[in-house]
Each structure stands twice: as structure tokens, then as C-alpha cells.
Amino acid sequence: MPKTPEQWLEQTAPEKKAGIFKVFLGYAPGVGKTYSMLSEAIRRSKRGEDVVIGVVETHGRKGVEELIGQLPTVPRRKLEYKGTIFDQLDLDAILARKPQVTLVDELAHTNVEGSKHKKRYEDVLELLEAKIDVLSTVNIQHLESVTPTVQSITGIQIRETVPDWVLERANEVVLADLTPEALQTRMRRGDIYPVERAEKALANFFRSGNLLALRELALRHVTHSVDRSLESYLQRKHIDQNWAVSERVAVCISSNPASQQLIARGARMAHGLDAEFYVVHVETGKMREPERTRALAANVRFAENLGAKAIELKGTIVSTTVADFVREHKITQVIFGRSAVEGWRKYLYLAVMNRFLANAPAVDVHIVTQESS
Image (cartoon, helix red, strand yellow):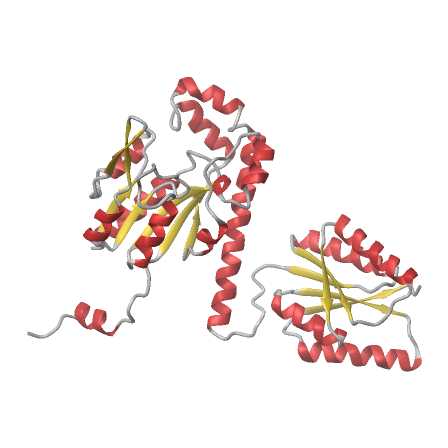
């Protein structure tokens, strides 16, 4: 019997080494993480994929409850703990069922004592190892590196966390976003918690300031995730070009006090372009007079006060060291200073610039004349 096109494709496709891990990230309860996860799962099920629910928490939200009914569910495992029965993800049952895709809500959840793993993200990792795709959800406040910041902002202790490396393992991170105003409206309507709990929540965790800060943290994390994905793609495809999808400004400074003119120029440019701002200096190993050391420290403090990331590079050749930094950090605009030099110093400066241009990727170069010091 001849093979179907699907059978030929399955035979020729590379063997899957692990499941695909997709995380829906939110900044607060009620922004739509679980709803988005279920919506994607339903679309994939309609396309013919074998999708099952491992665990989805409804929290009494009608929209989520309606979507759950459209997908098959692997019954949860019942565990008794301190006289109470808890429903937990049945990892072994899912592994035995071998679906293509499993939904595992609330990645930061701590399992009840007696479970196979202590944390739910460990269950997810075992599913991925079994080559099962996983869709999951988490709020930004549960990310370990962010938790201290969130606690200082909200005054609320976060008890369940996920290590950063778990989210870095994700093949895709999707932001489930909603403006703070819309989220507060949902809260007042009783769409997130019962109406009688709404006012208390709005006066505490769901205050406008808290939500704005949490949303910014979530947006930053997704931005960094996208940057990592692009960097990985460029490396995988051996692309040695600077794809200027976002602006990054770097100012090269020395121990010359006049460098502060360059830093101020760079800060204005970075602000105007809404760009990341770096200030770099190269340590060549040569001895420096104490006065110059103090001047360099003052330049670095000035840069940090203007919002720059101050970077110290080490290398014997300044031009190639800076060129390497520009390439690695995908800098799009670089600023060099130029004192009013004459004679052989002028030609030495031009030689340094030519060496930089020969080694650097495509980048806009700005040369700013400084007052000599």
C-alpha cells in the first residue's frame, strides 16, 4: 500500500529531541494567560493535534470554564495531605497517554507532599523530556530574579517561585497583556474575583502603581526573551551582521575629563532614539597617574547618573577591542571623541579610526570634537 504524504513527511522529518515549551506570561491575575493558552490549544486541536488538559485552574472564571469543556482532560490524581484531599496533576497518567500537547497551568505551583516532584515546573520538564509539547502560564512576580523587586513594590510576600533558567528553557514566551485600567475594570465587574473581594484587591495588589510596575517588568522580560531568540538565530545561521531592530548607543571614553561632553551627547541621542545606552572604556594595562584615575572614575559616575551602563573592556588594542564590543552587543550608534590635534597625533588618531572601521560591523560612527584637557 503506497504511503500518504503525511507518512512520507513523518519519515523524512528529523527526530524530535524534546517537547516544545511555550509559556504565556502575565503581570497579574486576570490578564488572560489561561484564556490565551486554552484558545491556542483549541485551535491546535481543531487542526488535528492530540491535545489534552493536564491541569487548568478556573478560579471560577466563566470564560475559562467554557473553553475547558472543548478539550479532553486527563483526570487529576487525588492526594491526601493533613486530612484534606487535593487534586494534583497526574504526571504518570499523561506520560502513559502520550499526547502531542499538554496544558499545565500555573508553572510556579508547589505540589502537595507525596507528589512525584516538589514543583510543577519539574513535572513540565519531565513531559518535555518525553517529547510532549507543553503550554503553560506564569505571572512575572513568580520569577525568582524578579520576586525581591515585586515584594518591595507591592509589600506582598511571594511564596512560590520559578527559577529564571526554566523560562529560558522555553522555546517561546508570549505576553498576555491588558492595560492596568482594563484590568481594574474587569476586577470591579467581578470577572477576576467575586465582587465582594474586588474593592480590597483594588486597594492592595491591584493598585494602579503596582500594576504599572509589574507590567513594565513583564514587558522587559519578554523583550529580553526576544533579544535572546534573535541572537540565537543569528548564531545558528552564522550571520555576522548587525540587524538593527532596536537602537543601541555606545560612547567610548577615556580618563580625559572632556569625555563628559561625549557622555552628555550620547545621553541626548539615546533618549531621542529610545535606545539602550552604554559607556565603555578600555583598560590596556598601562599605568595611569592618580589624577587620571580619579578623572576616569568621575566620568563613569557621570555616565551612570545619566542612565548609562558603564562597561570596562580589557585589551591591548583599543580600536579592535571596541569593535568586538560593538559586534557582540549589536551597537547601532557609536560616539568617539576627537581632541583638536595636529601633526603626527592627527595621523595616529586617523590610523586608530581606520582600524576600528576595518574591524567593526556596519554601525553609524559619530566623531565629536572635544575641548582638550
